[in-house]
Each structure stands twice: as structure tokens, then as C-alpha cells.
Length: 282
Image (cartoon, rainbow, N blue to C red; front, side, top):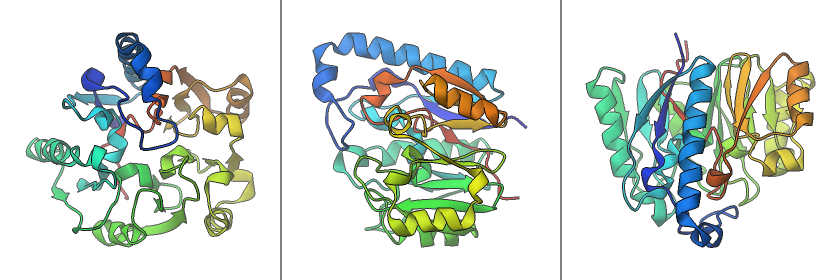
């Protein structure tokens, strides 16, 4: 079965505020029309790359005034036909909760989901950006700190009946787990060590053999290469260096580069722009 990804069209995309260190509203405002045209071209390129790699893509519309809906990885966690809808920490993104909830309910009405679950009041959890399923180890890696609440990983474990590993994020720059941590289909973990606390790093190294750890360098992280989508032997990511492409080639992975610079202006890359809809724990 082909992996299925939800994408949100960038019709209403812009960079109009700054809630992470990457966001550049001043750069966007210099030529909004040109940046939006670039964003639309990048979106089409990402969609084509996912389809060429064997993925199925479903595209929904965003909403005016909610530019970061183009990053549906933060919309919720979908696992075993259950959707846990995100609750956002920053007011600028809280308006996304209602339309994403409606999108999940529409998928349930289609028969693609069985249940749609909401978080308890006062808890923040920003979707698959802070919850990455690891099919090799049969667990979810869960991030918390800058965006998701410390108690959110426990609720994820309870909701889906799964084992989780808690990873505390150490910086505002790498504010979601998906910006600094990528699980590959054969069990390797591509990660940026500087994004984690000492305890978080210890958890990673205790659970993943050294030969399966791929450490990202500073420029890999700055290019949002860790924020990648891996489909079996192919990895779709924002423009990597030739050095990084070679590192993955040595392990049998082919990299499809996509120019996502217009979305990196808002602090998101390939993984942020997708939400996997068909993940199953069994």
C-alpha cells in the first residue's frame, strides 16, 4: 500500500509574523507576490517528488489568515486510524485547530479514520512535528519543551496504546522534534545532536546502535535537511549538499532535493509540509 500524505495548498501562505527564529516577515514583505509564486512552485515540486517516490498525496485548502496551515505535520498525530488533534502554544496558530479538526472529521466520514480525539484543556501538543513513529523499534519518539507540554508524551502513549520515548528539546531554533530528528525506513536515525538536552541525547544513544546513528552537521540542520520525508529507499528533503547526498548514498538511500526556501522563511521543510495518514503500529 502506498503511503498517503496530507498537504495543504499554499493559497493563503505568507510570512507575516515571527514565532520561531527562522521566520523572516521582513524578507517576505520585500516582494510578497514573488515569494508566493516561488512557494506555489515549491509546493508543486514537493507533491511531484512524493508521488514519484511512490506516495499518494491528498491536498486540502488552507484558510485566510492562517498561513502556517501549509505545515500540516503540526495538525495532529494520525496512527492506527485515530487522529489526535493538535493544540498550539502560540495564538498565531491556534486558529488552525478548528479547520484541521474539520479536515479530520471529513476523513472520518470518508472512512479513512475511525476516531478523532482532542487534547484536554491547557495541554499543548503540536502534532506529528513532536511525535515520530519508529516502525523498526515499534515506538514513538516524542518531543517536548518549546512547543509541546511535558505531559503530552504520556497522553500520546495512552491515546494510541504505544510505547514512547520522551526527548526534551534544548533550543528555540529546533522547536519541534521533526526539525532535528528523522527516522529512516531501515532503522537509521538522522539527527542533530545540538538540538537536544543531555538527557535527550542519552536516550537516543541508548536506544539506537551507533552504526545506525547519522549525525547532521550545522549546515544540514540550517538547510532543514533533517526535516525530511523518507519513503523506503528514497528521501525527499530541502536542498542538501552533495556531501550529505553522498552520505545517504553509501547507505543505499537516494535523495530527491526540493527547493523549499520560501517555506524555510517560515521555519518549515519537507516533513513539516506533510502529514502521514496511514501509519499503523501493527
